[in-house]
Length: 124
Image (tube, rainbow, N blue to C red; front, side):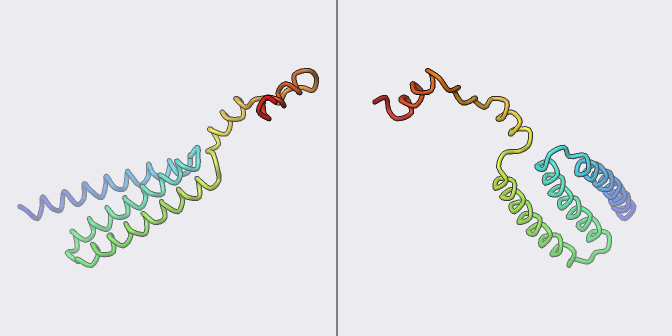
């Protein structure tokens, strides 16, 4: 009885993990931004850890749990590296578009320019 319940739970878990894997791959492909893709890759690592854990339960081979822990550590480091890369690149594309639309235009040459210069110099 317990073995059939465990077998059914393992099959159900594998089906759910497969569906999650498919949806995550779609999110990585569709994007639309780089942070979405990085989040998708982090989710792939979590799903892979889930697969490894289910296989470890199914086979009874405990070394798989150690492999899952190592994969979790590597996945965390990869996510941190991608986050630092995104921060080093600057603004995300949608944020840079908003920043470009709200950017102030420089004053035109004429009477307003000397007043603006005086204001920047500290109003001498």
